[in-house]
Amino acid sequence: MRERRRARLVATLCAALAICMADSGCHQQQFLNPASTTLPRELDKASLPPYVIEPPDLLTVDALRLVPLPPYHLEPLDAVFLSISGVDPNYPIEKGIYQVEPEGTLNLGLNYGKISVTGLTTDEIKQKIEQELQNLGFKNALVNVSLYQSRAFQQIRGEHLVRMDGTISLGTYGSVYVTGMTIEEAKKAVETQLAKVLQNPEVSLDILAYNSKVFYVVTDGAGNGEPVVTRPITGNETVLDALSGVGGLAPQASKKRIWIARPLPPHAGGGDQILPVDWSAIVQCGRTETNYQILPGDRIYVKAQPLITFNTMLDHLLAPVERAFGVSLLGQETIRSFERPRSGTGTTTGTGLGTGF
Image: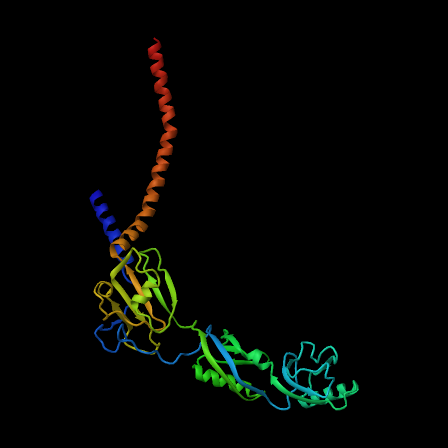
């Protein structure tokens, strides 16, 4: 009977280990031939398609031409070019660029004071300055005013984060939806938005930080989880670059069980797309057949060594049994410890009486 129970226990443990060791992930795998010439790899890389903007990419926008639609009414932080003659030669008003101060005024100096210009056009500002100078006694003053820079430059220039809703903010000029667009398409979308308030606007747009395109390195923990490391992609990485970026292979990793799982659209048939990697050939022999170029969304999976996984699974299975037996033995030992003093006391008393007689 005992032999049968032992055999059943061993069979049960083996079946449980087989279930634990079985792969439960990809079932319809499509292993690609490493010799295929269509797969980009080291020494035979391919250029990635035009970059598509997605959150949370970081864009940089520079204003090349931003001319407000006439008539333009000046606001704080705008800048104008002033040229004024016919004033006191001892206290001339310097020709140059003057910025509209936050309170909406132009400062002409200590001898001429400040003039409020908020909401006025350049022609109205010219007339107002001439009137103020005439009030000061300068009847022959000549004033020339032109717009130098609109505050639009300050609101549009700089870094723009693609927000969760797929838009970037242009300040008072609204938001522009850029998700799913290429750089050229996003540039046209920004210019179209600005054309509502500016005359023939022209901007330059580029990607400052490629935050939305990544690949993943997944390491099998041999029964102790699967750590995942996310890495940004630059378009030039290979398998060797990717694994060197995470510190190489973990101690439990199997050099013979590494592959790339390449994502496919939901409607694509043919099963999972798996690219096996020969790690030893790459690092020890310098072979390039399986040192594939990494594409956005790739998952590099590093399987653990089977013996280490088996040992971990065995520990997980036997630990509850050992704990149960430990509790049982502890209970039995506790009961015995309470019984020993009684039997010991009776024996000692009997011995003592016999010795006394």
